Image 1 (cartoon, rainbow, N blue to C red):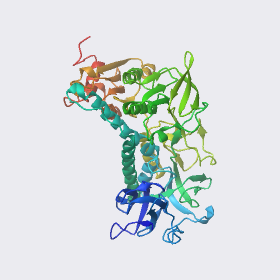
Image 2: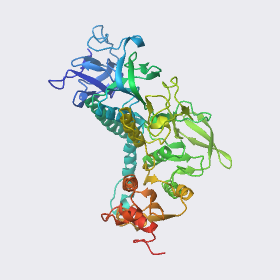
Image 3: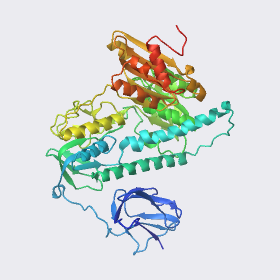
Image 4: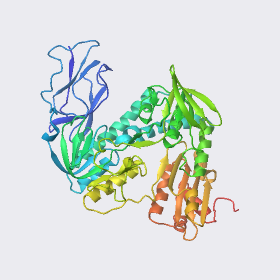
Length: 568
């Protein structure tokens, strides 16, 4: 006889719980005591363990559903067992259900409705609620958007694995003998998923504590200050808004190349759930996403080939850093093809043939192909309200206002700078403006990071941009081979580069290639945001020995006063 899985009563005050995520699917084998699903209560998230060993026969409650305690949410039984009539799933008598209703039959009013719960949308919702607004946050997929679920966070957990493998590989030179490490990609993916679950659940708790109502499904914006829910758990609901913030994000762009739409071609989403390490991973696109995944899978044991049609990797990066990155990847054993165009991709059994063209046409065969050529804004559900859309992006002003009164847009859908921290800042500004403020977005000092080995951190203008804009500049470069801390760490590959305007000492750009570069760039960002000069930077006392000293040393070089480099 099948065993019931119930919504537990985890505390005296607990009356209901939300299904956050099922860790198993119907038909999976489970062991007694194994975490089966995650639920959210008023105060905490918790894992529900399997009450018995067997097979998960039936899931009665889906992710996002809110159920009273002691409600049956599933069954565990023996393999092949058929539920008896008494056990068969019935309409959830104890569960609040969304019946099929006409869109016009329910209408609720909100001060702010946010469409999309990525790093821009959920921040906008929280900020709006802090300012006293009644806020609804609409999300079709997972809270946290691409960044938290299929981008920033999951990739960084895998980059950390690559870093550990890198240290193990080089430990012998430091007198530490280790055996050949064994890679368990399934365990790595499980760990990645655990990190994501923890962060998503945390955000859900924060949203609830701020009184933000999360509405599940896809919303379609209509012309009368309303959003109609057309899919998902809350399909059929219709909400009205005083102000609307569009934060629908972006998806992986698929270029018009023959063969890229067939089954088995990977984007950033699918590659994060692989159960086997590819023997040969071919990456189409040598931008930020491409070089990060190249770093990860080379460390895990894949042969990796990057195909980039531009003359260099990450072409919007400073040239010196780009060239150092390319050299570093090649030293790691990654094949880098630049000035090379992909003509077609063909499936051949369990492998793919990638036809490329540089000086001549040739073929590359790999068992996996990753497409990483950029992002495309998500515009579904907002097509019919007359927004000004140019080059597939919503046009906004510095206040994040669209051409339509009371409608703002933030994040990737605006096509400005496609970074999570930019979206979050835009979300804060849009929410404040929606509540009566008049703030403007400043894009001058936006830091960026690339999580390769070593890392890259950058803020401000590249050398090429600075020379085009300013008459007289100076460039200071401090190689990490001259850094005591880098030498002690055995991580001397890289440099810190600082670009200044000579007359007033304005810091125009800082570019770092080396360990912890994504953390170090924070100092440069802060001093540039506060309009500090290069003279003020060199007067800041930096702790020794640290990697941060290298920023000060590069500033000395830019002033023609190098301290720890020979005088020229």
